[in-house]
Image 1 (cartoon, one colour):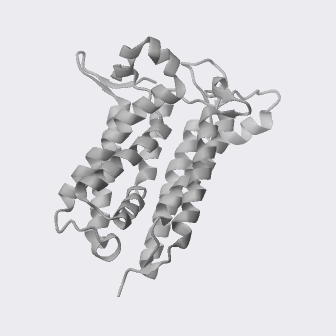
Image 2 (cartoon, one colour):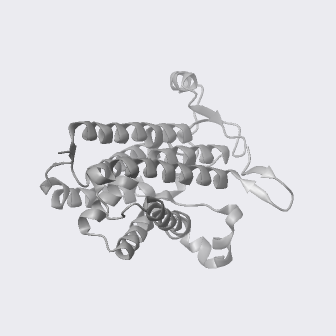
Image 3 (tube, helix red, strand yellow):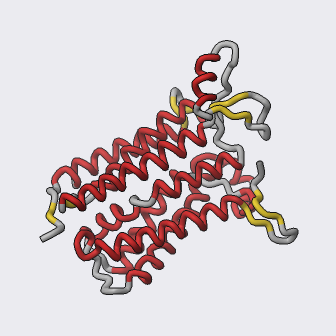
Length: 286
């Protein structure tokens, strides 16, 4: 396993670069297909016929949020003291550790900037968020596979003597793995668990709900964004208990990530009560 997918000497192509390109292209063309078919019926963005330009600008803001602020999120949330003494390493792109949670925070900020640039209404901002989360699961699938290839964010060690039944069940599901870059112990493959629950299953669920709503002819603002935050917070919180990588990040009984997810969950419940719960479904077809 290696960070590098193709070594051409001077130029090295990394797995994370390949996966990001694939995920952003999928995001771009999938949203184009959605807007091309349903913008006039559901989202109703005033973008005339220039969907390509609208999505190109939106993708640029999202990429900046994910890459730049995802990196700074890792620096600030997880290793601030380390990088304060080694500030130059923040820009070491060949060691580009990133934080998904940091990316979420600053993608929110960048979307607000995009909202201001296009002078959208608040209702458009809500619909924009609902739109963005539809292909998000595919990106998470690739991110977790990338984590696996890089042998990072690994799970807890399985004791073959004491936990033989757990090992047997997980081995049948291909959810145990020896991360040879770390040690020679069997570990829970949290990468595949997260890829399935955070990515694949979420992608299926959110798109099933979306197309079911289309079939019914109804749309409720905030709905898909609310589902994403609830789903991700709960799944990631549970999976953190299986991770060994986070063992040095505990604050009392939870990891830093779990505390962040806990408060994200609470804050989102507040927004749900304030905005989503008061909105009624609106007919999107006449």
